[in-house]
Length: 368
Ligand SMILES: [Zn+2]
Image 1: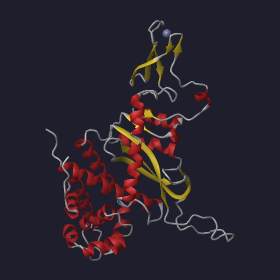
Image 2 (image 1 turned 180 degrees about the vertical axis):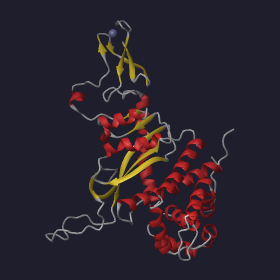
Image 3 (image 1 turned 30 degrees about the horizontal axis):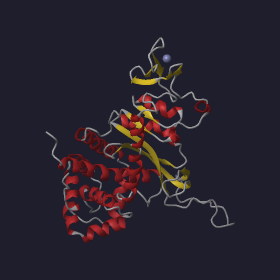
Image 4 (image 1 turned 135 degrees about the horizontal axis):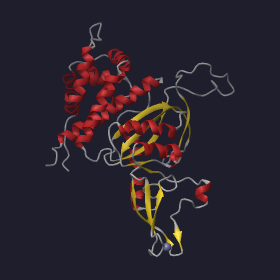
């Protein structure tokens, strides 16, 4: 595929000129926020995009970068101060419905442009360490901490990834559903780190269903609990989740049926019926086949099939995307405190990620 070379400022202009982002800008302008002489919403939404696209952690450095680059100022129509950016972020938190509508519009355009987007999704949660200290004691053997600078942050657990050890962390958790084919986020939510991932899956999948109808949802072993299976069933998607060694599994209740002729073979599933069909290997049994109702032990896509293995490998897409969002789009490290601010930071990161993906998808002519 030909690589499109576009200057970063030209790409920023494409994003700001897109129908979805331009609509957000004009709606924000219509609110007439700026009491004192300020900047238009285009410059300030543009500054938010610069922050994520250049992975800059602070507004001070965003403002400095724009002030130094005439090409950026030309696209933004100004060079907002870091105070203007702070004030804008504060006001934007009160206008979440406008931002939500903009993000929803971008997601639905991505679905129309990229036919594979959202067909199979992978769900996981990732740690967002707080911009605060959560240690209980101020120093070794010192007094207990009485004031926490981030009252919404809490202690949670993260699993080991690659060479990094698992363990406790203090802060927030980003749960996301990512398209296994395009690697793009479909839905996400931010919670304090203490929140249980598996119980968030239902709300997250409901948000997925507002935009796309996935056929399958891949999750890791941590989600091998009934609420995660029910959440998948509720949106009509087949769960792809490995089994934990529970007593039923130890007793072999998850295995394929057997008879004197051998182990029965999988003969397809009927999602409407919510069951999978299994056949006697020689067909000598009567009846020759049987339906098994879908459950944690016998999912619609059986774990012994190649398709299950392929889809489970697709789960890596969500981990890769967390890495991309943190390293290339400045999702981490956090430089804000409080759940509402952290959630806005995540949404603005997603706005940059998805609006850029949409601009790139539009630059490629649709296949005839
Ligand atoms: Zn048989």
